Length: 275
Image 1 (cartoon, rainbow, N blue to C red):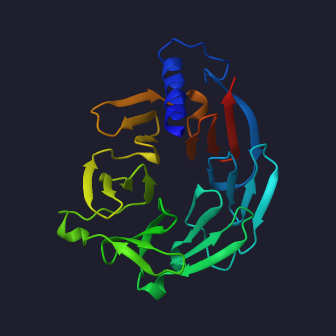
Image 2: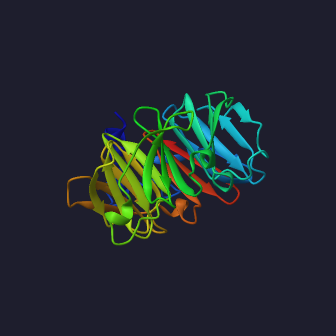
Image 3: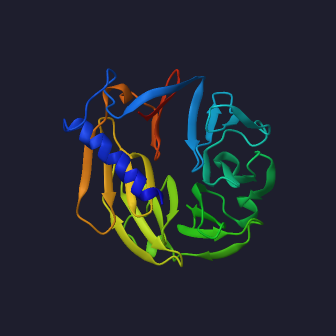
């Protein structure tokens, strides 16, 4: 359902900067600043229900509901070191990854711990990226084995790919794993996108390098650099791009959702909603 809405959002932005939509005073066209969360935020993400997850400089994880009201706080902030990434693909099963401790903490919608996976106990000593799978199992890229592995909640192995060193001349170094519409995407900012099927079979590579905030919605790939948004639909040769609105420049992170655009800056999180 979301792919169509993301495309409409992208077209609204495109229309704004092609002169076919009226700009507001902030230069955002069809989106206006509707909320500002002032806090020392180092990272954030948003789930498909509009809940916002904030990571503070003190490594505190806080969940806000779609109205911006506090909904939950994760209290195990100092147990495993700094949070490396959060996967909120399924708002009922959230993955918190601590790279330094090779540990995945699975929490529920109230940020209560459901289970903890010590990857080292599975001989996965070095993993840069994880992501939730289509079947609620967990994808992990094992850097030392150079394999993409799928694990159950108890950490046991479901399946894995062939050693990437047998497939690629240069082994990818992904920072993001996204499972969408029958494919698993590994994003390496220096080498681009590597796509696999759910059985670990290699499908394709895409030279979409240098993207920040890489996201996959259905078969639409979204990202940006310091000056432009990018949109690419799998199976086409059409890479669309638009200038980033002036109000968003200098952002640490930008996330586009069907109804809002979230822009993280040094002093807080700006939320732009449709008029």
